Image 1 (cartoon, protein in one colour):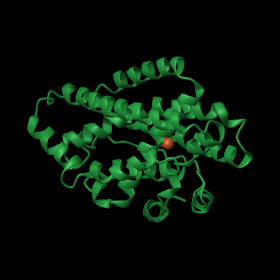
Image 2 (spheres, protein in one colour):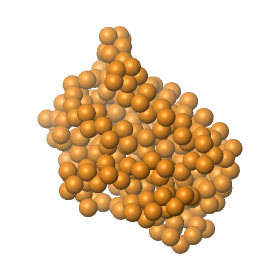
Image 3 (cartoon, rainbow, N blue to C red):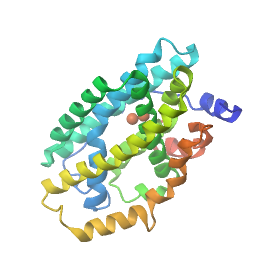
Image 4 (cartoon, rainbow, N blue to C red):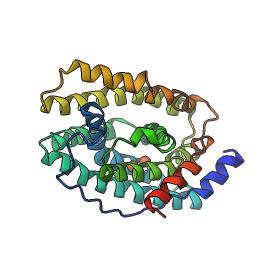
Length: 275
Ligand SMILES: [Fe+2]
Ligand SMILES: [Fe+2]
């Protein structure tokens, strides 16, 4: 770890915060600026969070007793944060479920898939999978925190949830990675697992988005798909913009704090009164 990464690790300690968001049924189904494509894409991600984050926690907890004392403290912060994320996203998912979306089915599907993974993958691979997916969340969080226009069209009541989650994902973005480097340290396992999880993530995010759109009978609205994909990949090309950040993971010398997001995190903490 470079000295800059060490300093940023000290500055940004993962602090668990209990939030108690309430999702009023008056919030529209297309809470992301009236766009069914973006609203269902992020709803699909949210549907996978409670089970996904439980998997992350377990894969890191497996090593908690063995890591150095300071990292063990950060692991506790990480576990606390992910537990709260699971709780708030469950509230959000139940709210979207009340609108008739198959949120419980997606949750059950993810649970089954991850139970299979727990049985098949070694603890090293499970931790590498967590590192890969934590890199995705860190990159998406960076996109949101540093480009206010991305989340701007969201309904304010939902926006608060996503900003809080983005802040905390940034705070703990190095924890699973540091555990992996200290306890496993294999570049091959880390990078090959990233390739596998990139394919899986792209496939399952698209599949769950499709399930939600299908439940609404709008899965064949090609104009909506075209415009949504254009916004993600072409103009302004939100995901394309994050390509470099994503690829940096494959550098053998990569560390999550090589991307310093502290200023943007502090800005949004101040906006939402998060301490
Ligand atoms: Fe999280
Ligand atoms: Fe996380």
